[in-house]
Image 1: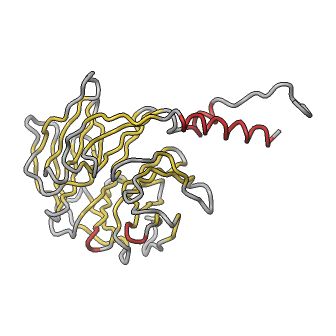
Image 2 (image 1 turned 180 degrees about the vertical axis):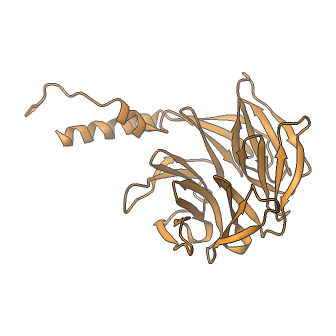
Image 3 (image 1 turned 120 degrees about the vertical axis):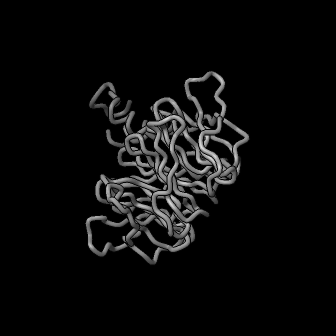
Length: 290
């Protein structure tokens, strides 16, 4: 019985993958890196364009409009209430954009970083991957005078971040792996999660699945973080330098850095969720030879 159920799962996965489609949402961007959804608008950091653009996803023909310009190679973004935090890679700083006023107010938040890349928020703690310093730092955003303090050092080109409870997952570009740390530890120990990737960058968690943008492999892969020895499986192929990932409903939106576009894919994203909520009934049960 278990074998039959397994074979049906494999058949469904194969059919869904065959039918998977990648649709361009907006093209002619300038090295889009990360994505964030605020209401119905998808915000995109355009690193070579030195700006953040905005896409109205309710539009029948979405276009990118300038939102904040004159930035310094913007990369990761995170939202907290009406405050949008942005890592400026070549500006070596984090800026804060107040969205509650019109026009939005842009202010330096923390300076003196070393190639800040991705951001993730845990309560009042903003975690930052500092690519050029090979470390993760954190900033208390509620402090009167916020400063960055080291969390873990000695990494190998840390880029993407994803938080699951107290586990912080980190993509290490030049080691071609995903590692993790426990952020509750005073001196966190870096643990390998999965290796043998191809230039991993952006990360996204959906349930127990960690989706990985493999920039050099031009693909999206995923692992089950509950597996003690996870193996990355391909989800989407034939992309063009994927970096940022965002799940919106059952669609996966992808910032394709080298393709200068934002695309999306449906149908194959959350198959495990479908299988969990829609179990198969096999009839007759039990059976011997049908």
